[in-house]
Image 1 (cartoon, protein in one colour):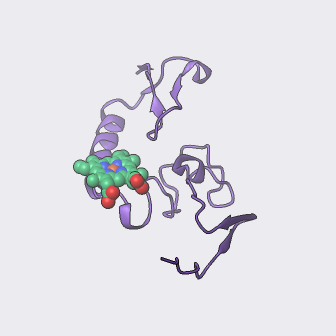
Image 2: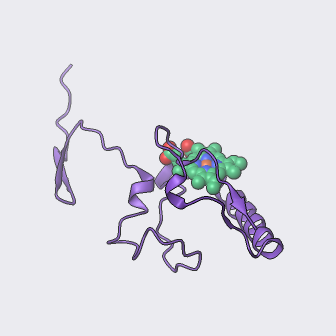
Image 3: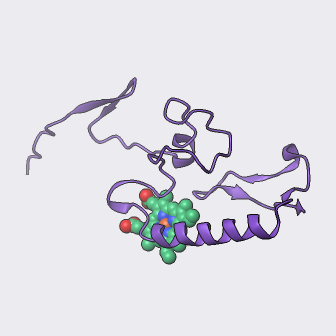
Length: 114
Ligand code: HEM
């Protein structure tokens, strides 16, 4: 049986050409650090107006638990800041070790003092 020709044999994504049949893997953490979309992306700013981040994915597989996750974070972070206003990282930032080999980025340990 003959396959139908793909109606869009290639498409341009930024300055890259993606051909029919090729896959695109989007590293969400890197996308959220794109300074063309988010000024000073490495600065923690919980009051950022930008809401176009990809932390919960995008499209049909966008995180189903995001309303719960947002609520949990709002409650937990507000509680921590209220109860421990002097909370800070307990070691120089360069000593923190990050997990790089998994889909969910994070720290192995986060020593804190207050
Ligand atoms: C800060 C916390 C969370 C983050 C950053 C997060 C992030 C994500 C991301 C990026 C995806 C998309 C993965 C993909 O495109 O394949 C996803 C999917 C999903 N998340 Fe979350 N998530 C969080 C919390 C939760 C919670 C609390 C629940 C459930 C109670 C949950 C349930 C799901 C489910 C079921 C999917 C799959 C949706 C689908 O494939 O249609 N997530 N999440």
